[in-house]
Length: 498
Image: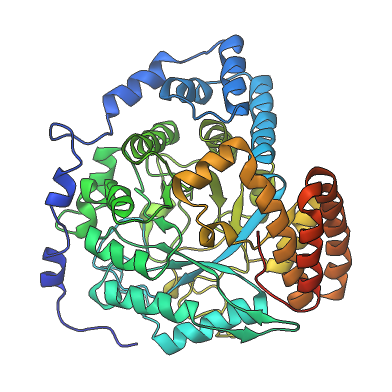
């Protein structure tokens, strides 16, 4: 699609609705208090073992930790205590989510942007970046590959901030994705949940996204440190407004979107401060709306085309600290989904699964239009950053089987009303895990029948048989109905769920 040639200045000037910031402020202030965050981190240095053990007990009871508790965990230096924290994080994950890993694919629809973020290859002043926006017919091509050849059931659709990808484009693209059906080996492939990663929108625009049935709405603050935020987001750009971005989730929830996703771009500022900022954000949402983030993501800055900032980072997050980030987040918000993406390499992703990750992408391509373009490889001039893990969905599924995990393609909860506060309550109590186990087996069997090679099928059948035996033992009252659904799936029916 050709980009609009007119200067988007008028469009840019009309984007931010100041009244939709002011309504959430407290005495003119937002909820991020850098002095308090720094004071808590300083106050909790060298926590004793008894304090940490008490905090871990709270996590095992699936309680959201306080800011003080989280700061204590961040300041642990004893290697043995870190080992215990990692073991507890995995126990918490399995208690809430069982042994499921949910998979998805990112779909970048365009790389035009009015912003000028210093860490991003899509910034408007990067003239080496090859700009492209997918038309609706090009989106259809991408989705037919994703749901008909690879087997994905959920997407995270990524939009740049530009008038050509405005709310009208977003609405039509989501409708297009949901409307596609593609014949598979034994059934029909389709995308059943479209999550959206986009710029901050107004309440009115978010209501339109809610009406077309989006899943989670993601807006990452990038950094919660106000001065760093100002340094990397030049003035006179939309993204330079810290508070407009900070309250994007408030507006989404007010618009009726139950599930929101938070995130930080780790490497812009000190990782301990960023975790405290993330958790402050989550507590603020719980306070105002009764429910926090549905998911939290923690991308690290990766090399990007013609983007010097990514090469010389003062706050670069090393692998060991990255694993600490995941561990602390799993313990601090035990009921929240944690997402690791293909920014990370295969080994780090494997290690992260054992720390409590619940979702990950697979078969990932982020060059615009690259799923349907078989000649595409990683092309830095057509993507936002360089990926660390380009393995196929089937390769990841085989790795998860070897680790004892079942891959889930379930989207049932969102269509049964198990969203927002409802699903968080069910996750805390362990009830949602039971539904998810049933639906994980049904959707995994769908994928196996439609997409697996014979070698993968053999391995998958072993773990499916194990899961069925666990269902028989733990959910005897519903087992007969489950087996009816399971046999119907084996015979070609699709999208049966509890």
